[in-house]
Image 1: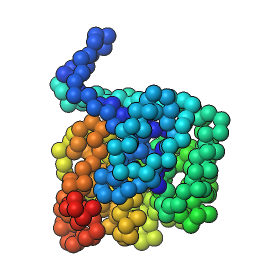
Image 2 (image 1 turned 180 degrees about the vertical axis):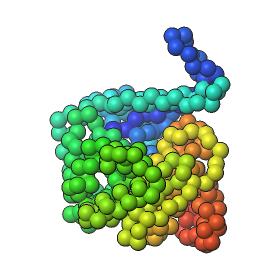
Image 3 (image 1 turned 45 degrees about the horizontal axis):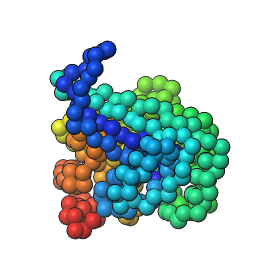
Length: 322
């Protein structure tokens, strides 16, 4: 199950040239349901799963978000929020091929809304719960830790993709099966710049504290590292054409969660996540990754590693087998 406390309607479009003051005419506008937890659910659905998604949404924009989700194979657990769902806006400038992203903070949670979230988590059956994305501005730093506590009582596992105080508090207080900070987020966590090896060492230090079992640190175009009980593993990113960076991290988390839930070994699920993050970069705007691209990149990387890959993941290239 994926959690989205601060979802969005993601709008993307194109403009020839962006300048201050004057009206900028855009075209090819599309919108998708967005926000990190929503994106994770979208990716799992794209790969052939049918995820549960618990989300807050309100106002006319919340209705638009729900309508978009109604078109996807997602089990929705919608909590009507008092605040209107935010709209994120991405503009691709054709002249420079530069992408501009505008991400509003989103509404504050009204009294009782988070308690309803916790009540629903207690009620819904799941084996894995993905807590990801920014918290609403008035949410407590331990919000994800509270969710982790409920998950632990249900013998379920928490997958965490957060940053700042929420990341620190959850790692300090809760049992985390998998955390996925970016290199920048890991640097903020430890308070200094890190190279790849240092990021792996920092991740292992967190694991040795005992609360966290696995940590993936995404390195952007350099790939990612996995730290766990067997040490640190590095995976390079495939060389792909660049479309948009929107949702690359969410695609990584969604694909890795899908693989883990299917019983795939952690190291192989990690490689699948790297493929999905790179596949997302290939698409434009807020489209996220395509299953066929994920499988192809995963298969290519497996061959380079001298591995046959996991058939449960390779068979996703055939839509009939998803």
